[in-house]
Length: 163
Image (cartoon, rainbow, N blue to C red; front, top):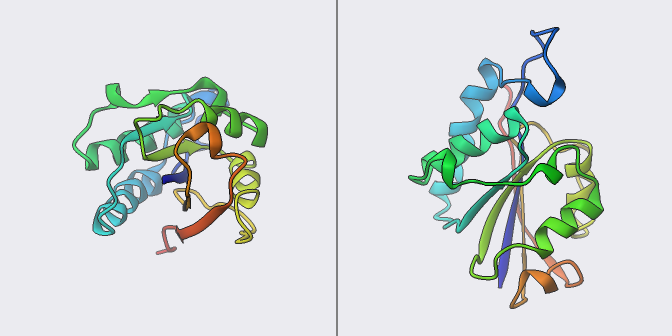
């Protein structure tokens, strides 16, 4: 079995007018939500074998909060440039190339592609993947190469509630 936990980056800041989209940092809410959501995965007793992230600042920072909650550092996150503004085909390609030693993977990326991707996995649909939202699925397959063409089961969906 393979489990894929798809996570949209936490809330980012638009306060820096001269900064490229790729380099935008998290805002205060993003820095608050990411550790909370990571803690929710730990409370579910989910063991994660790998953290795979877009290389954009806001996604990588979010992934770092999750990795740190699991006792890992930023250097242990697998960085995949193709996950920045990825479309469904790019997500599928990244997933098919995951290491087969990993049974459960947390994957961090961006909208609008991440919403399209999760809506292509199971009959469970969402209108919009919220910032720091977590959408998880499982598949009864022996390899990540089989994942894209297999039936997937919706596992859970969670997101930070507005305060």
